[in-house]
Image 1 (cartoon, one colour):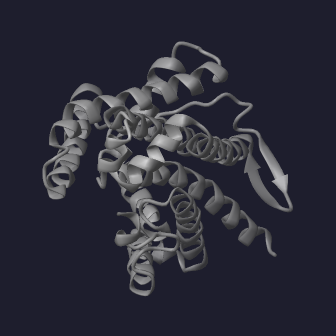
Image 2 (spheres, rainbow, N blue to C red):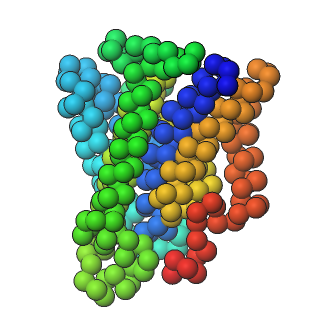
Length: 297
């Protein structure tokens, strides 16, 4: 394997890790309330700004910044659920879809009003920018941390969903909300917790995205959030494992397709992403690991 191909694989793995974090949040929310929350990517933007404009500017160490960013993402997502989506819980699904787009646009425009649309540079500590040679490919300490943090987060999430009472309640609610209510499960609390967990992961992804690409702006969350949604659909919306798998596959495909094609095709990377979505859904309408709707009822 040439060093160039290895470098592209590493880049795809890093990008896929960030997509996977956001995609898992999409799937977690959808599996419980059947809502496609397009404001989810903007929670990642808020997480990035809170990290680099507040916590990092205050000179806090990394072991404080990461939990603080998780808390901000969780709080923002829980507030959005409580104020916007909970009052519409009994409304048709299309209402939630339109509302999520409205919330996304609102967050972006408030961000532009308060912070301006001008991208802001992100300066990382020199230790995180250290380059390492991996069989001829370049890997930074931050790249290693992104992949490791994503895998640890997904492992912790899996244990949380399978081993804790709240996680089991989430699984029960995702199967049948009415039955969960009859069994005494506090559905409102469970749904808020699902939004909070997804928001925490999105906030962490925003921190990673800003650090990896060196700049942040109020519109930075929309396109990655949309691609994370594509990853969730490819993996199977409602399946956490499928969302993670879809994130890694999408990240790899996006980098490898652009990296292996002539440079003039690089600007069409988004077209390849959505073309891949169409191709997967034509062959597997429920995604790679998704289940038919009647099996989840």
